[in-house]
Length: 583
Ligand SMILES: [Zn+2]
Image 1 (cartoon, rainbow, N blue to C red):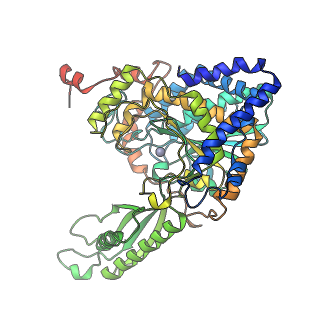
Image 2: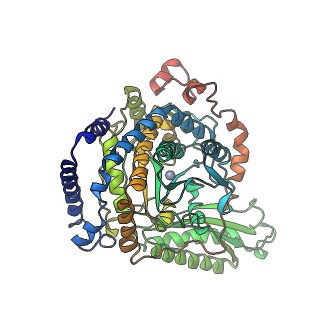
Image 3: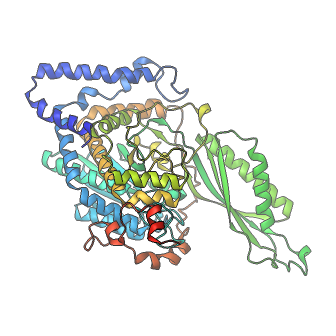
């Protein structure tokens, strides 16, 4: 058990015997200790936009440390952590089960059926097929305020099928999708945390509503903005998102990642015999290629923070037919909403230019996904960090570390350092001019509508490529299981902060209203007529699901998925060579 946990349990036994006067003095002291470093962070490294402008402002925005040190709250949090520990097998089964489904975005059919089934068995009301997405759902339990929403993504990555616990590329089903990001572990974190807190709410008669919702098709940034547009966050007071990581941490302010809009451009040409009468044809594929060339030239004159990339989804049928239709799919990423809109407008003009050059038409543009840049809530992030420090990182076994180092060697990571053993710290956000681009998550849209934080919990191995089979290796092993239990404790404790200490929610609201959204208001990136691109991935899932089904986890027969697959943990490359196996 990490040192932080024993400190937490220690305070449970101490608190009841402290006199009220001593307790008051103690909490005042804690307030002072907590205030000082945060106020310091408002110094030279403070970002230009966003955080409070004066010391008085920042003091007002701090979470009420005395409120979070309330002895009743401290006791309840210790109880929640213990309860999460007692559910570690339940958590492991959920992690393994969702891993075995390995479903792509918009087709998380088995995953959603399974998770909502568990929630219904535990008294949650479930609304399915929400916001035009068959696999999206909203589960709620409890009544009244505050409403605390727990979210996490559930989709996988194309071609990321991989045997867990095996330190080299060894797919379960070659070519099939898999959890090459680790999205199989986030809902288990949330559900375990919610059940631990629900027990406490029932006994203590705490008012409040727990809402659990999935990030559908996050890998396409295709779902969350539609949940927002459909109004599912209108009554939510705080959103605690959870996402797999290799450490235990959270952040506040604007993140290093980008926002994005994902747009498909479809060109219309004219067919002709490509050898017999090419002059009668107009090639839509030419327009796609010229758009790519135009964009790649224009890219040199964009800010360093941008990221943009494309794939050709339709490049014609066969060489001897001039392509009538062709389409190219772009991601335009920038650090702020107006900058994403500017990039998109440039993309549109390049597309129109390509159509003019080729005598084709730009038949349509379609938004396939979108994500606002993320901005997280400072008071909730600070409260969550206190809980992360109290819980600490999991205790890794030598087998866990062996697997991690072997995978790092396999993918030629810069450092072969194994799993994280030092807790990340809460850093202030970096300035816009210091950002250098990066990925996106449509939790950004939620974060501009409701005070939000993302809990990053340690279920994966550091320094992997991301969106890759290697990122799936740890995700149904003790590394993922322990990481999810650790995350669930922090999530549960932060839920209790929000439910029991109203001062935290007050300061979260002040930060959201007076700092985060003071000069920047949310408006959707997608247009009113855009709809969730639910047909994406349909063909891939149709092709691979029958083979993947054979590998679904059966917890009634096997304690773990590793056991079901007959995988020795960890399986290292040297052992494969000596056993004469290989492919
Ligand atoms: Zn993700």
